[in-house]
View 1: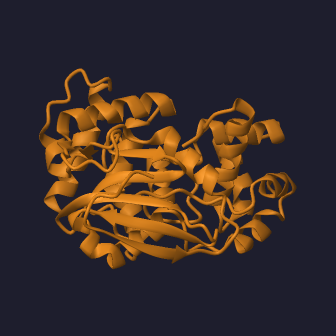
View 2: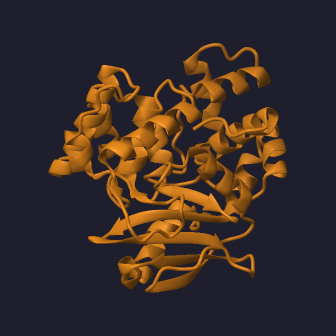
Length: 306
């Protein structure tokens, strides 16, 4: 780990074992926003702003293997106790994996996947807005392609920071206000998707839409997003999985999920059939999606899906 910035403060956050920490890091590493976040020496690092205070955050597995060690660096360190909740959501620390694994293991196919990856979590997001931006950018684009475009957004609308936690982490993600107003000409996205992105940013900036509600009605949030032009069910369910911590969110139209389900059961040819098949995995369909995506990643030797 790099030398910490001062001031800094740390907290140990417990979780229910097992915890596949390496796969959590792999997921973030494959999707990290260049300049804003990084995975370095088995730790996740990022720049943040919390309650108006800038700073940085590092999260790593504690030596005892039963806690995560979260450290806030800079001004934001005064809020370390309040940061425990968003960090816990981001790294899915509230789940009891034994309960999830037992439920999914009733399905023979998922049982084999769970056996290979006990304690697999659903990676969350520090910012619901940031995750929504990433998801819209990723519509019909590869993980690598989406990562490239999000990096360009940061360069155009983000905030450069002087006190870096680590060399690769020198930017804060654009605010909704900045992203709504910046010129995104030639950013590498179709014009309609740029319009969707900036419409969402403007709605968040004005307070019309909140993407970080953890205790509100997820059904209302789903309806709000689906009512916006350019946002469909895949986008909403992916945001629900990761930003709203809905354990039963299911991005049904995801091509990796559909293709692998059809490989298992060739009779599954249309989306309604795939949706019906996934009903057996309630109330943990988000975890089923993670297991299926990871099985694709294992075969390909890289992170796929999401």
